[in-house]
Image 1 (spheres, one colour):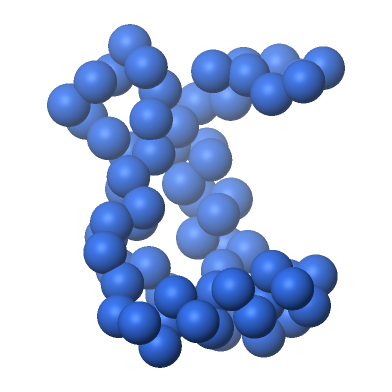
Image 2: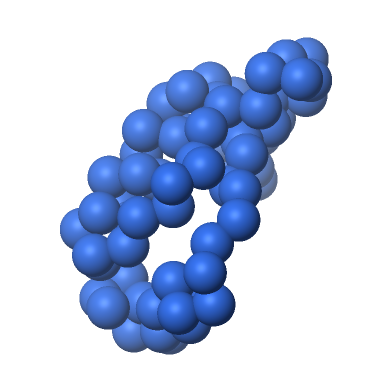
Length: 67
């Protein structure tokens, strides 16, 4: 899976990167993991979160990654 003008990235690398960025913003997604059900698609499982965590994530995105 690629994004515009970028090399493919391993799902495990994406998970580690996202987990680190979320941690920097004080956010934890407990179910964040590589989706092993469809390895050929290179998917990342974000999982479920409480409503307050979703709101915190939205606020961090609005603030450029700062919660």
